[in-house]
Length: 397
RNA sequence: GCGUCGGUGGUAGAGUGGUCAAUUACAACAGACUGUAAAUCUGUCGGCUUCGGCCUACGUAGGUUCAAAUCCUACCCGACGCACCA
Image (cartoon, rainbow, N blue to C red; front, side, top):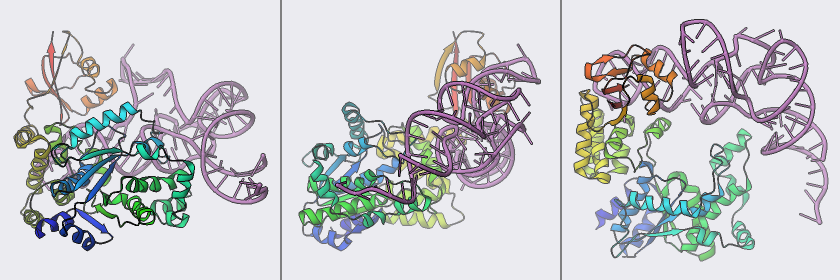
């Protein structure tokens, strides 16, 4: 019992507010706690970065606590001015519901939505959209401007002379109010959400005189913290098929291995320690550990069988340089130029790109193991390889 | 309301009349190497091309000029400062 609690309250956790002991006491007293995790339903997919907190939520659910997955549909609708690229479009109710459906599917391996203690799903528009201006003002009166300004993000913007908008001040309040509206015992989230979650803690105290606990999770990132940008692009989506998920994990930088084992897999803490030590030895090839990692994670979402198949296919393709089994096929009319065929099928983005690739010696006609050297090559029936990971099979009609 | 500054490629961010399809960094792509789709190194990185060039792009619309991302005018959007503060 004690041991389980200990892992529940340490693994992957960055910090617990007010204290770990506080939470531990409540749990060992046998209390059934209500904990929630807020997610932003803006996109249709969740990625492995989200898994960290969802997984922890699932662990609490297994331990018998009540868990809520909160869809931040209201907060998502407001849009974030810092994100000028998107100028975030307003989500329709339909889109939100659709995303929810996908989320449910994607998280079903970590959370249980049925049984006697199902994870609940709530929407924060339910209470936030009904608030009157006076309610908002009342909320706003609980926080001071300097409290808000303490936030690193705001400090940085002031230094850079970049704007801070009023509604950005409201954000933490809105998110914080979620805790009050649902009357939860605690919240869980990435440590990048610390400020918002603590804001909810303050509100809880002043409005309900309740001590809300907050668990912040470590972020999935390079041990140097530097390479996050690099990994972001490879951040496997939970919608990816087993092969892609496996492959994307393999392309993670080595520094991510330990933290990913801790945050995304179910291996024991003992094994985790072993892996950490192994990595320090110069005789260890990090690749082998990464392969193990990729199988572990892929297994969670696709089952062990598919994960092992994905591993085999990966080894064949990249280690033995063979053509993978399930590649894209398309048919063309006889005599079509290879450029036309590939661009039409969107395997390559433009004709210029095709010429470049040919000049770089990136395209190979696998059936004859021959590099394509001419821009005017006629497409043949068979398999073409572009770069290291793009394959396609052409069929002549 | 007045004033100041600014809006550039996937992002950040240079450039302030021709040498600008636009420095650089990140992302992306390719090659070499390897331990892999890691790391490192090298190259590429708007589109079309008969490889000579051509076309489209630096907030929008006009204008000046042989020539404009760069100058002018109007407009749109934004930030900052000052004033106002019912």
